[in-house]
Length: 494
View (cartoon, one colour):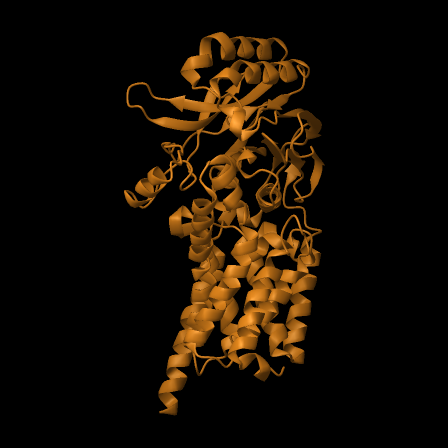
């Protein structure tokens, strides 16, 4: 493929930025998944026959397009609900986008330093390792817009229960590189890869273990600017109680994240205990969410609690940076204080908390942001029959974020071969089947109750059994062998 025209700095720079914008359109709510493949082909073209410095710049331009469009909802959160001014919100959003754009820049810079090894085939390895670095390690992980998430509705989705989001993303990037090589061997490998994904769609990794459970998911639609006002607390509690009472008798009822706008100690005796007793009388298990405060230490936890057959709680372990916890102290705290932005200061729960149970089965609990991490969903997974996620995306208004978040949640169901119950404050509340498809959902920004049924499942997918480690080790092995081959070849040529 003739790439000479894109070696010109301006043509290649424009292509890189446009490819970043195109890449974002592969994800929800746009949902053009094959654009991820096309965008990576364009990006890899931009990285050919250029210096490491130019490859770095083009990767950064790609990242500006990718995150500038893809996480534009940050502005909505800071301005509309954080109540920062327009200039401050714009500056913080720009800084956020600019920071994450560093990672595609890094993915371009490293292969460009390889002169004797085939850059094209080296690029997908580095691309996925950098995605893993961004998604798991930096600032406790920001796995937004990972290539694998765009493939939930393509033949490559067959790889998700086997390889997870990172392994599937590698196949997308590898396909882009092989197409760029543009010879019959590359085309054959791409064909085999995609046909393999289509074949794996037919494999049933998990199996039912009991009768279906009747489910009710409640969406209260309490806007973020009203959620925590003291004068609204009683009306909020009355709303959730009324909606719950209309569905007594189902096996499980789920409320969204912090549906109860008060600490446990404030509502336990007068509100929760009567609910617990009513749930027992109607043979229903109730899953609610509220903050818990340790009155002695002052520590606060974002928590989920079960009522009915058993009272127990789960405390969120993976906190949201700059939302529930403050990294880079004292700098981050000082900046937000100057901007008069007040955010939560929560404590992480323990890593070995016992599974909660409802409807007679144990389940994996995730609170909001936790559902974007595949490794969280498989901890203690052997005994879990389904997944429960409670979320509040009210912070992001009518932006693209709720759609992106729901897409990422779907990945957890497909990775694990389990039904997912997703109860959200403002949407998207949904039931997700083990194949990653939403079987039912409520519209955004409406009060409602989603009634449906799920089947408890048993068995482990390869991903649920092994996690991301095999893919990571494989990519690291390719990276080391590639660099070693380049070094030896360069030494022989001297």
